[in-house]
View 1 (cartoon, one colour):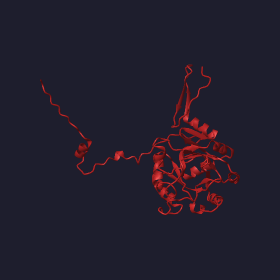
View 2 (cartoon, helix red, strand yellow):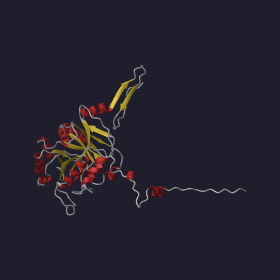
View 3 (cartoon, helix red, strand yellow):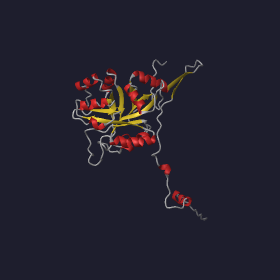
View 4 (spheres, one colour):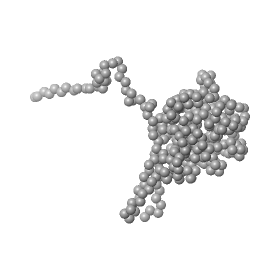
Length: 316
């Protein structure tokens, strides 16, 4: 009987690395993901570009769990173009440990955003129980001046600073999106400019009616407190975002578009907004070509990251 001898050569990468680099440490920079940005392809129309935004974000300077500059990193990596830091005015459970006034979280986020070429908007959340509920003030100058006993006085101060006021999660916490008399008065006085139709993991169908009836901007935001990936996972387009159709990529461009009500919402594969905006967005995304050979074939091409469902009626 013949005997065979097999020799097995095992090559471990760490041994190879050790030969390639005779040092105590071998670095693997290719494993790092902090400098990788996801691209979200949504075409603009009529000279407007689409900015992907989240206008409701919390940090450790109120009741969030994340440092302000990390909020910028999260949004930049996920392909967003702008966020608003909207820490609570009245509710700051960590204020004894995190030192700073009501503007500090924005300052930290803005410094890092400028380094990345990212847009951070100064905001604050006026936080009260219903009937008035919670409202975000965006594009303010000084959040400290919003710290007032009467929430209406706080909102009027924000308006003096040129703020865009958003009515947050109208269906929270009682699952009733009630339009109270205080909201009717604020709408009459043109204090409220937008309404959150989507927030966190829920949406409020009646808020669509409010947006249409009172000409409010459609808004959809994360209201994030924990890590974004912890809440939504790492999938592309997982978090709710407000699509802003802006004439320029700047804070002023975002502000002009919000006051002009050129917004839509994208969350969980759903687009929501005013009919005219959504029609123009669809026509910019989907292109049609008729096959000119009398075959009845039609070619449709979606050039965006948006998903559309094609329904065919009267098919024969």
